[in-house]
Length: 183
Image (tube, rainbow, N blue to C red; front, side):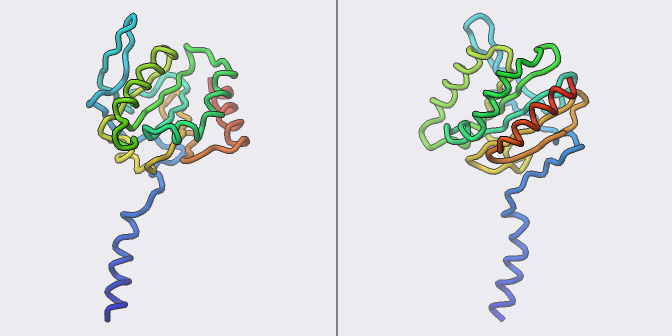
């Protein structure tokens, strides 16, 4: 009897312990709004924040990173960031969007994550950078913690590539070609 109860309990819990993203190619990103901090806006040397919505990701080709607020997650797809810089996509047709999950930072480093995020905005002012202090994007999109996810979004806002974790060299090449072919 105990075995049967254990099996039923495990079967009930399996959907809640799934770590797979619910974002599929051909679909739009699920609607989510980040209001606690949000998108960084640079005016001169001053950073301010504004609400950010996933439903506003239309009109340009985009590579969207959703990353945990820890250097190990950022480093997972550093080769893709290098490839994006080398591709020199036209700013009027392409934009990188990076969402940093500050709630998924190593304990005690949230202030450093915020400071590094603001430094990144100053270094790459044309990029869209979002600081998600409550991890609403990670929760809403069912993304893995302590990781990095990459999405390629076409001009209509549809996902044409989605991957959680480290991209292979072939996947990096695929991402760059998808953007080039859809500009």
